[in-house]
Image (cartoon, rainbow, N blue to C red; front, side, top):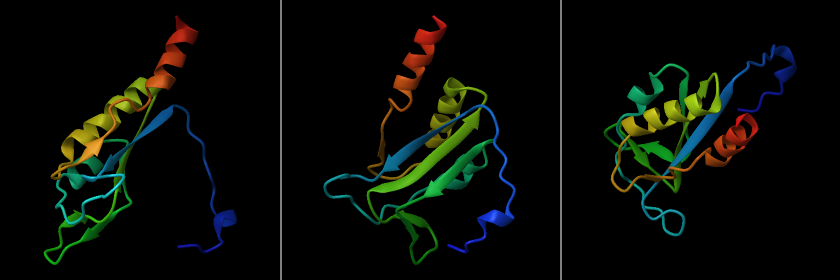
Length: 120
């Protein structure tokens, strides 16, 4: 919620790299399916240096998270370098399940290729 108090907070930068893998619902982007029950969010979020950001989720009548649009979750990880951050983000993704989920498996590839070219 916008409060206009950013000036009251100390912001600290940390080194390393981060990566985010977006998990999308079946039918995305044209006709995203909704109402699919999502499991594993807590397990993924319990991994060290992993955060799971909700985008298109809601709770159903039973209290379960379900899909409510196309771009459902962003699984984000931080680590010392990009390869480690990507590995950790995809580890988090592997713990989350719902019918028809999809995600790209090439996230960060360009960054890795650039790093390899500089180091190689």
